[in-house]
Amino acid sequence: MLTRTEHGLFATHCPDLAANLNAQAETLKEVLAVSSHQVQQAILQVEGQAQAPNGDAKARVQRAAHQARISIALIIFASMIMAILAGVWIMRAITVPLKEAGSALSRIAAVDLTGDIQVTADDEMGQLFTIHAEHASSAAPVV
Image 1: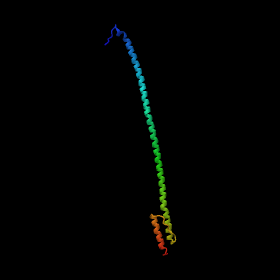
Image 2: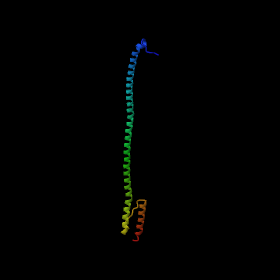
Image 3: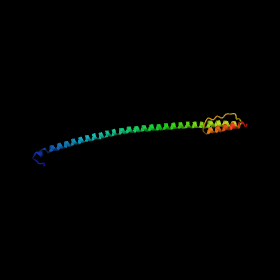
């Protein structure tokens, strides 16, 4: 181990060594500061790049949700139109034969048994028309 003496190699070079060590320490501090700054910049850049896909993913999710809402609205609208059309068809399937039955019954009530009752269906309304036609044809010879 070197000791400081008044006369010797170490004593003459000690101030130079201290100055050199101080200069190297300052240089090391500057390099560390620059490196630290560069690391912080790299971290910020990586964070920005990491957030960019998240922003893209968020935008894709928002577009998909918007398209899903539009699809659901269109399905609901189409279902409502189909329900209305089915209701109109069912209403006509019931009311038209009922009107025909009403007019046939009105003729029978007026003792007009000459009208012909047309049976066009095989459902309950068709059965009702068949019974009325049989009733009218059996009552015609009596009147």
